[in-house]
Image (cartoon, rainbow, N blue to C red; front, side, top):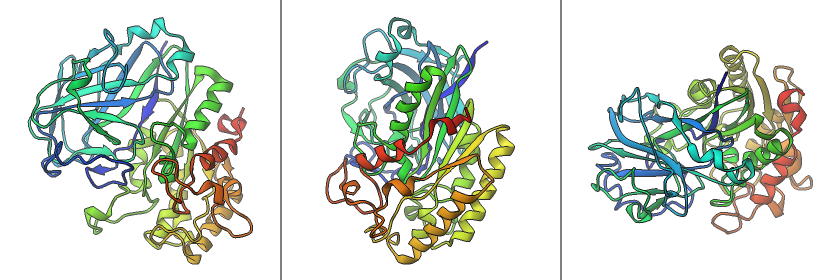
Length: 416
């Protein structure tokens, strides 16, 4: 028996360029008109699976497109250096036996299984630091492109109108870099034994704002390493955080250029959690953007969280649900988050998290990041790790994310 297991994922949060990006290069020469999207060009998305095996499949998404998109010449191989693929590892991917797939607007499609023959020659300790290169060509014009803005990892793009280059293992065919992931939103591994999947679900604090580009030091990354140290390859952690995401909003009346955090958490539960392969535990930390951006109150957000808990238990029988308290935002320089009113709602929400019997446990992220004398984010956790500067008082840096991951009781994750 084998088990399809979510090994990597990134939520498609909206149409490019309407997302909260970090250190994004200027892509105007690559995508001259965002509404027209990509045209006859190739993408090489670099991703790091949380577990490995010798058979995989990918999921391409047109969740936020406005018309069908045709992909062809899809390949997967082991990243060598930069945009180069390690010679001999690039394998073609098919969809229902064909090398071409058309994905309708609002939909996503899984590929056929594809072998990763090189996995048998590498041990787990080597593979854990390796990344896959998933390459594909878009036929014609895509229109609005579904993407995950804040990858905090470097991927690569070919020039506008340069055709199909996915089979190439050469660095020079993908001269442009991006810190976002386009169209690719999930990678599964076919595991020989049942593997428990943990989903980190939430906003920019899970997405990793303030952490290091290509550093893999978001709190879910650090927690993943702790889990693998204890459980080996029998656990996989995927990150479904979106910078700017809200539990309840935004409403459709909000202009697209202001909906930078994607659709609401409640609206994306099916796509980003329930439909993922093998989910056993969900860690949900979210609500600060509802308070800061949308001016919602704690009662409204708690009601939304309760609705989400009910939907998760219906969609994934037996799932463990763990809530996280919200980290401090008092006097943050981001718009709307630093006020005393937001802090009062945050504190009320955290009391709910600490006391509710609707879930299987909670993680007190607030306790390890707050300066008890001021109520603000601790000073040593403020300076940004990715683009430098003093930080915004909302997003922890590398040190802060390490403290958050250390606050997680591993036994609570699975109820062991």
